[in-house]
Length: 161
Image (cartoon, rainbow, N blue to C red; front, side, top):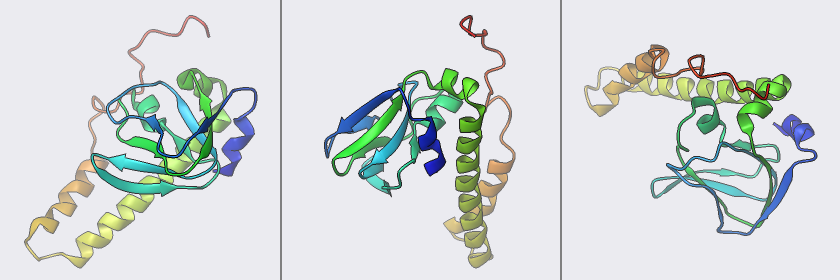
């Protein structure tokens, strides 16, 4: 995702001390964040689920794209520098190349999750325990009703555009 760094010009660069939160699970910012340098951790509930150290990593995209609260907390695990995109929805409309980079990143994440879940399903087929639900989970990921994931077509247009 280093390519996204090309879009990090003229905006808000922030130094984030170790231990400082960037986004809070359940909160809303409407912002995208791009890691320039440092190390971040993603926390779901009380569990650290990922460490991020790759320059160009994007945060907050799910909240912006789904128009929902943040699904996890992200905090600096070490002193870090991030780029903040304030009006992320407008940015993505005005920068379709950046939106495509983020779409590719999300598709890659989904591919990894699907591959992992399919492998679990294969490994535990016929065991009859709680892992048997993996098939149901994969099926539900494929068959999401449109009402749960709305592209925003029912919202009013932004008069600034």
